[in-house]
Length: 300
Ligand code: HEM
Image (cartoon, rainbow, N blue to C red):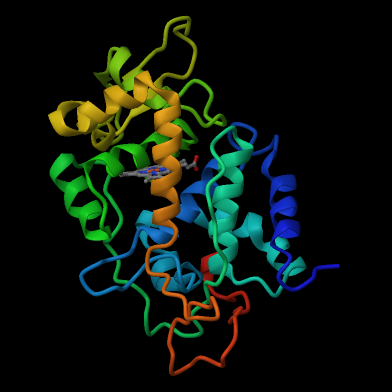
């Protein structure tokens, strides 16, 4: 029985679909983590718009933002969970799935609170262009993440999520994984940044860095770094934190826990009853769980 408010049961059902031998490196976990992050990373502290409340990616404007290319797969994977637990909001489901996936891939247990509601119209969708562009460097990272209310240490800690998953040439245009085991949450990303010999990749695609880890053969798929990843070792203030996290896994896990919990709370302002109403004028006094959208945003 899918009982209202039984988040533990939702968590268990999410855990059960993470391993998927037909998808990428055998897990949908990384793309689910990216969904949780992109649903939150539209936040602006300047006007309190964007953030994980609302689940705006169900709507075409946000769902088909080129920065969100590929996330329709993540949304689609979660659809059966939403169908079974129809009372849960998409905004809660996507963020809960993110923390569940991180833990299942060996990462920390990140605190998560329910109460997000779903938009029922397009009035409050954030503008496009608020998510980071991997082709840029440190000034851009600061511009984007300071807007969300993060500092330099938090930018570096958050970037450590790139120990997970890979770039897809048909989504972002970039290609390849950052780490040898892209379905294991770890501080390997920071170690690789400092220890491997990164060279510009010679290919027809966008500029990115490429390297092989010790023990990798010529035939093995090389590892990659985006210009924004590489900027973390070029910028002295960022580099300090890269060095700390490469040397101290526990410090990284503890800082990542705090910063990811902060990320998924961006734009979520709960009333006394624990419900974060998107639009008080539309509020029906309850936890608004919107139906799936029939548009392009969840279609593959
Ligand atoms: C710092 C600025 C960031 C930039 C420029 C950036 C850029 C990208 C790009 C280009 C991809 C590849 C998408 C694809 O082709 O499928 C990607 C994937 C990913 N990103 Fe980021 N990202 C950033 C920060 C973050 C943060 C803060 C998180 C989470 C805390 C995150 C988690 C992920 C994950 C897990 C993937 C793998 C997705 C998959 O395997 O499908 N990223 N990112």
